[in-house]
Image (tube, rainbow, N blue to C red):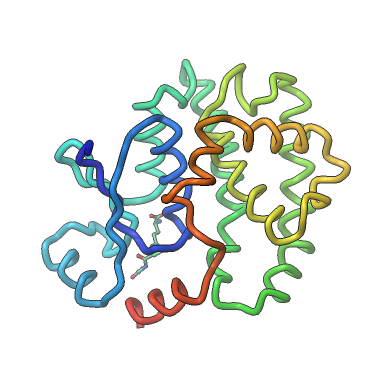
Length: 217
Ligand SMILES: N[C@@H](CCC(=O)N[C@@H](CS)C(=O)NCC(=O)O)C(=O)O
């Protein structure tokens, strides 16, 4: 065991892309699932949660909070954060776009599915699918930045997986670059192993919702 530990819930939320990135860069990790309020209170009392929030990644004797900071740390460590400042900045732009694309879905975890999908269909999909498709068309490499996979690509596959899961792969109809991207990313060995492995969490299941309610109430 590498000693890498992710503290979060047994659900997707802000933990899922960290899990995918850890797997992609080849770092074995264990997970600590919060289930009780007392566990969060203890982490807070011990001063481990700078802003009183999770996810928290423990790695090489460090404790890192803020999902964006964790992901950039892992991306730099795994060599998937661009070769220079311009590339890293472009990765940031696209990565942040991917967070805006998927973020509202996390926030709506307690809403009825019908409402969530209405928001996705009216607001999220029309804005982000054409934009990401265009970027892929421009690079022509199959990746969002440069000629190899970066954090931006991992960021984008998360909402695509979610929306295909909710709405079927016809959600990508009319976006040929995204269709190819989806196919290539999901057949990538490391991503496929994550998707079929123990760290992949189910779509907003009731157990997760119950725990979040209990811990944050
Ligand atoms: N900006 C933070 C937000 C983290 C966040 O909102 N975490 C939630 C769980 S998903 C939390 O800890 N909420 C408790 C609180 O804010 O008091 C990040 O991206 O890590």
